[in-house]
Image 1 (spheres, rainbow, N blue to C red):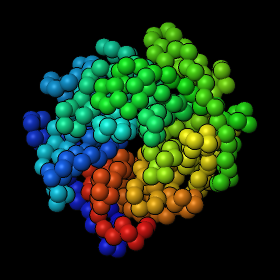
Image 2 (tube, rainbow, N blue to C red; image 1 turned 60 degrees about the horizontal axis):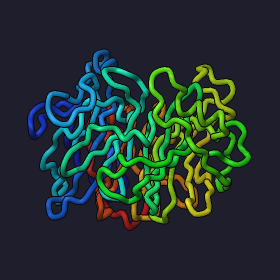
Image 3 (cartoon, helix red, strand yellow; image 1 turned 45 degrees about the vertical axis):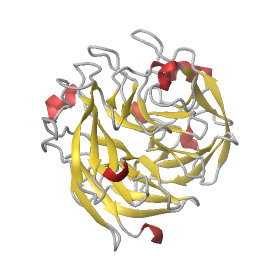
Image 4 (spheres, rainbow, N blue to C red; image 1 turned 90 degrees about the vertical axis):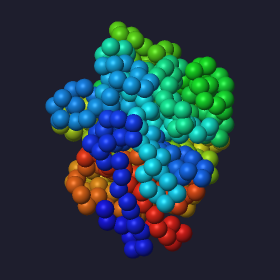
Length: 395
């Protein structure tokens, strides 16, 4: 990895390495968050974006379902939990949840657990398309959080009132952005199972999809539409079809979302193929290779912070995180080169790190609780990185 002068990195928990409690590190490193382990250092909970078909075709390593909390024995995805010591060395790593599918991203809760999201609504031994909670200290809960919906989840973030914002990476039709208001807001581990209200975002003045907005600084009011059936099973109308029929605004490849230090909610659209896209699932009103949005929960407005036109070297922003240093960091999943890019509050985009290993995406960027270490993944071959240096100098 190429980094600015003064920064260093360390690699650990590579795909195929021995785990601390038997087995080996699974493939498909993806979304991730960091939590304080006190004097012991930092917990990392890491997703593995895997399904049985890809495991078989690409000779990948599935998350084993023989031990620990398991949702569906036919699933291949899940999470691992890592303990990173104070000197940024790996102390332990083990499976914390298995039997899920395509665990792409997710997000931390206000009570310091991880929500892992299934980016699929497939049915194997059980229906998939859910969110699961993983406690970095106690492990995963294999019971899905039904009220947060069954759809192609990507990521989740919480505002300061305990409301959750969920992105959906789906097509034909495109996915949406959702808000979940828990029955027990800020209720702690397990409280989301008590239920709540799921709604979809409708953007004022947009009658197609969000790709039509291409001028940074554009602010648009939003409202929220109730989802009639948050848990559609086989044969029922998918969530996104329900809400688009009611006036929800579609968004192409709604990817990462994260709580900003000012209380705003960052979210990302990775690309849009435009009206002439060859693949029907990529067709949108306009084309781009990335939008970075920010939602103000108080003003009920979204703002386009940064825009990546076709031809940008930083195409395909995906996961995003916000640190204490005055900027967000987006992981790109581009066609050729992949970067960690800094996004300023003024919309400025600056390269921070370059994947000099291969053309595979960065994923799971997250700062340690003290803000001094950035953790990130390269998805294939799966490996996790700790990055540190003079953050106070900016990016």
